[in-house]
Image (cartoon, rainbow, N blue to C red; front, side, top):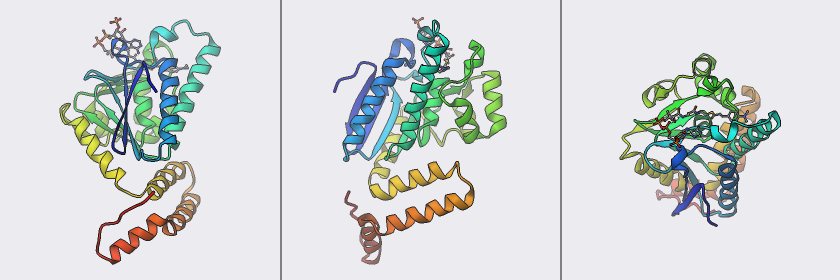
Length: 259
Ligand code: DAK
């Protein structure tokens, strides 16, 4: 399948999607949302894909937000629909059965920070910039930013970012826990791919269980989330991957996980 607003590539078991609207610094419009949805269909249908990386084409921008020129004439109904489409897509990324890594190469503003936060974790270039500047446009984040940001970095940091609209450096984003690791712009993609390949070498069943248990458990109380963990643990232990992992350890060899 060919795409206009994204580039879709596969490197062994790792899919890489690059946002590709360089003239608008990869701002998100409905075409991007539709094409990303189709790419996710393709990924879900291909069981050989074990990890997804989201990044921006070029060096300057991951996503500079929702496309302001597209939103300027929105009616309230258009705005609600665009917001819903974006939110549903981000829920889909969070519940994708494989890990998703955000590889933030430059500006991740507004919808850009929101897309990155819906990934399982964020690696960033030292030159990346983050922020929720919607307040400067007289609106608020519309792709779940107010909610995911406070869950990721705490309520006070989230309020400060959304209330001031200020753009923070990659180091500040790391300091508040938004970004896991920083790399030089030259190293970022290679280091992200290294981690993706490491993750791709693990068992698919246990990987999906880790993602789902942490993701869904986060919104539950501790007792119920731990109950969910026990269920998933039992399921993994009796799966072919669990049997192979335990046997390999006892036989002092590397596990060979099958699908
Ligand atoms: N939308 C459209 N075009 C954009 C854009 C954006 N978000 N960001 C940049 N561009 C375009 C610029 O207009 C410019 O186009 P030309 O003039 O060359 O045609 C080109 O990209 C290069 O940008 P600059 O010339 O400005 O480049 P600089 O290096 O000088 O500055 C910048 C880079 C990223 C600091 C600056 O472009 C900037 O401040 N951009 C806007 C960032 C921003 O405010 N992002 C948040 C957007 S609001 C909702 C759903 C979603 C949302 C809200 C509500 N509902 C439906 C309720 C989400 C909102 C947002 O994300």
